[in-house]
Each structure stands twice: as C-alpha cells, then as structure tokens.
Length: 170
Image (cartoon, rainbow, N blue to C red; front, side, top):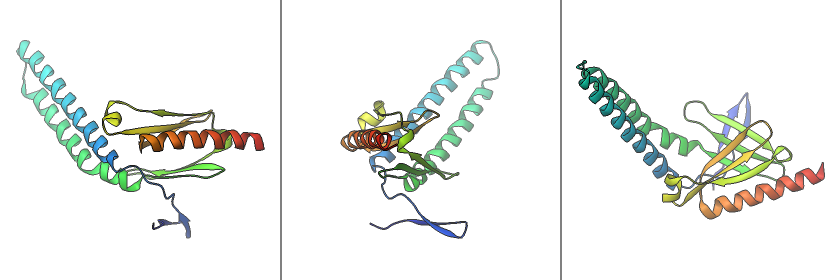
C-alpha cells in the first residue's frame, strides 16, 4: 500500500492511510440522482402553480434547468474527488480525518475528548451495504461516511474502547 504525502509549510506530512469503501461512489451518485428527481418534482409543481395563475411558465422551467445543470456538474465532479481525497486513521491517541472537494480539511480528534461513537445508516447507505461512523466530542461531531457495515461496527467499537482507555490514562 502506498503512503500519500503532502508538502505543508516546507515539511512533509503523511496523510491517513485508510480509505472509504468503493461502493460509496454509488451511494453519492444515488444521493445526487435523488436530489435531481426532487428538483424536477419541485420545478414541475412550481410550473403548474404558475400556469394555474396564468403566469409566465418559462421562469420556473429556466430555474429548474439551471438547478439541474449545477446538480449534474456537481454529480460529475464531487463524488470522484471526494472519494479520492477521503482518508482516515485511528491510533491509540486520536482519530485522523482528511477530506474535501474544493477545500481540503484535516481534523485530528483526540480520543480523550470523544464522548460517544455511533454508526448510522440511511436508505441509500443501507442499499449499498454501507454505514457511517459518527464520532462526537463536547463541541462537535465528525463522520466517516462510507464503510462496509461490518467495518463500521468494528471501527465504532474500536474507537469507543480506545476512548475509554484514553480517559482511564488521564
């Protein structure tokens, strides 16, 4: 397995090594398609309402068309870039997350600050055999979005146990 390295302020920083499950791409595409279906439904409903009141039906159709073009462009770019970028690692002291499409974000969550860890699974993740792991601290929550269901359960349990041990060491 190759390790990815980025140059940051003239120092080389190693990126986390674990990746999301490849099926997450399908889940992101399915979510984008669902958004596009919703946009068409709202656009058509708006067009019918405008038509009922004898207004210019071209306006809601143009707005819907522009929204669909933006959503299609986002669907063509974001999932692949997000998948290529998303990385994480769990050590005995912290959880290291790196992700982003246009703005790359690196977050290191000390395990001693973890309050609870949970898995979650909406219909799109479930249909693809995936789950997300959410790690919560007192201030915010962090999510690893696309892991195989068994991997997500294992990661959740491991982070919970490491957090418990980190708090005992304090």
